[in-house]
Length: 286
Image (cartoon, rainbow, N blue to C red):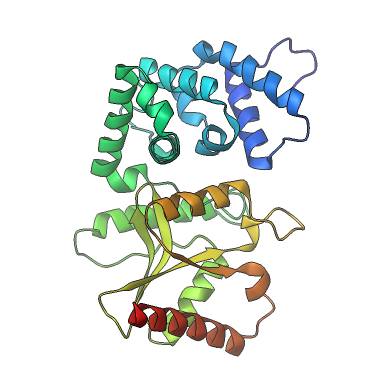
């Protein structure tokens, strides 16, 4: 909790506040945003390696100014964030490195050499570690008495990592809607896999093009919890994911909750079949 009596937020709470601002897209008061970013830049040296790892890629990509990005990346390099212990907690930093490399070329070129070497080290470790550095989809709800969605996803990811060399295939599901879409594809006889590595992300569903077996069709499931409550607007985190996957060369075929939820079981089959056939025809024309 943020206490009114605090003269300044503790560093860990400052990072959590920054992440929340980015997730909620709090920009209605530009002056406040400007002062907050300046305040964080002045206090960046207070962040230790663990706190640097806590900073969300969304905050770096959408909220930080270049001056703060530069200060933050320098601090990460100075503390060797992600490499400071044996856990190698690089999930956020692997995404941040991708954002900087794909969207901030001039900033990347102007960074000190030791920061560039650090970012390359993050990239190489993510390429080597793969499953250990991948970003988990946001859970439907926090783990608790009614379920443990994040824990289930982590377990599925561990199973997938252990079978990646050719054992039994494991699936990583981000939501019940994701399972529903996968079940429709299975019923239609479309070979597919749930949770396929692409950079620091997991593609929801990668299906085989049954007409052109050399091609793949990537489905992105936008579940109800990927929208701001009471709206049909995707969260900032989800939109960043779409943007980064597009920059990695993926063509995403969206299955959106507002269109999916009202459908009957038969209509869902028809919906997926039509989507699959349309893309197969597009692939054939290419």
